[in-house]
Amino acid sequence: MKRIYFLSVCIIILILQACGKPQLISEKNYKENDYTIVTADNNLRFNLSDVYDLLSKSDYLRKGGVLDTIEIRKFVDSILVDTLAGFEAWEVDLPEDYNQYRMFKLRYHDLLIKAYLKQAVYDKVVMDSAAISEFYYNSPEVFSVPEQVEISHIAITSYALTNGPDSIKMRTLSEEELKDATKKYADSVRAMIDTPEKFSEIATEYSEDQVNAQNGGYIGWTKKEVHQHPFDSIAFSMKAGEISEPYEDVNGWHIILVSDYFEGGIPELNPNLFKVAEKSYSNKQSNEIGNKLFDSLFADIQMEYNDSLIMDTNLYLVEGQEWAAIVNGQDTIDVNESRSLELSFRNKFGVNNTNNEQKKEMLTLGAQKYVVIQNARASGVEEDSVLSRQRQDLWHKAAKTVIKPGIYDVYWKPEETAVKEYYETHLDEFKVEKPLKVQHIIVQDSLFGEFIRSQALAGIDFMELAKEHYPGDESIRESLADLGYIGKNDVSPEFFEAASFLQVGDVSAPVKTQFGYHVIKLIEKKSTDGYSSAQGIIRQRLKKEHIENSFEAYKTKVYEKYHVSFVGKLKPLHFKPKELRN
Image 1 (cartoon, rainbow, N blue to C red):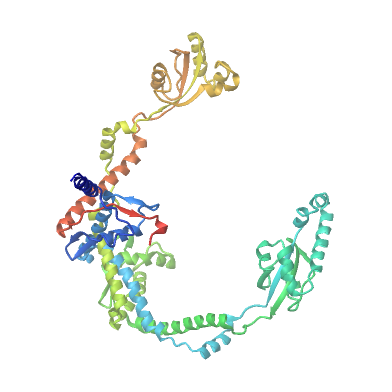
Image 2 (cartoon, one colour):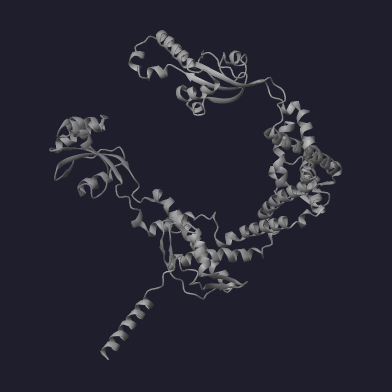
């Protein structure tokens, strides 16, 4: 009977322990312990597994560890609010927000024009190998190259001698002797090379051009007027496979190997050059097709100008949203868009402000983009699923930006009165502990102290007086006299009080303390209220508080609007270090 009772007690204890300690969720068990944490309208649901996956990909606990439920709730709230803001974004009338709608149109029009040009121009380019080859050999102005040699080289200077095995001897040589020794060294290196194959081995071991030495001295194809004289006269007189004798230029001695020679002109077409020619041919073809298309599109643009606005008006003084021109009765160019061309046209005509005719020319140029857009719409390219999805994403992103100030305004700044009020109610946090910067001279007689003070006030440098009269070893008088910044706890009350009443530059009458009489000079005084130095910190705190309060207010609003409900209890989550997570 006792044994049964004992087992019952043990089981109860284990149950109580299990109940009192929340289960730890980790990468090993989070999927099998999955459950719904929160639900909302529009079939929104976040499960434990969703939250764990998102946190695992984030920068939370980069070094690994356990994330408590408070931090998890903050993370879930941030994800939820962002998601619900996305729901609200679909309700935004984007054209009502001029700036965001303008940015949307700019981005979307770029995508629309690219999609249209792909369909109307680039997809119509026909690539033919024979045509590309013919184009290559018939385009010397594009593909011709000057006379060239393919070279490797070995560089030799006196450095190898003055830092080599015989460096002590070499450093005793005269400049002329060292020059002769370097030439002999270059000749000895050349004597080691009997074949082009040997050149690479010797270059790797002996060349002082460390970059190219790693590649056996290989430099590559080189045209004239690249290297120092007399390189051209030597290299371009050699045949392929020849190795030069050592020659000298301003940088030292050189031995070169000419591996190949090209007399200039169009090189033989090889796979790499074919790719270059293919790209150039494609560009030529697309330019021809594109120019023909644009000529037809721009031949008859119907423009309606806002004559009352654009006569001789300075566009920078006009409301940016005013219309300047209408293109083919469909699209409007406003003043903001016109300004993007105004400066270049002022420079073009050398005027401070464009006149009516110049503005019309400018607006007609700006209209060309809309003519392309109008033809893109008419072509049906907007029906493409990819472009349609991109348009929807851009619209939603812009609309979401419209409602962000409703969550928190990133440009919000606290009023000066709010900053001062915060400071006044948190004075203890912003006290300056060491507000006074002082120098002093200690004496044992007040009359002598008055004498020192009178000399200081007469213009004698205070630290020079300290060097002469401060007690103790002369070598440390200056450091003892200069106390730097002090606070109430650094000196006696009498000393600090006397220094506090001084104006910067003043010298006190002798002040008696337990150590003697002090003559004090005030060098600098920090504001005792510390407001000027505290402003930045306070503004940051108030902005953070504003963001948090705005977020909470918006969160409350959208949680109520979309009926957010936390249906599952949060649990601590364990994460591996970031680099070890799946």
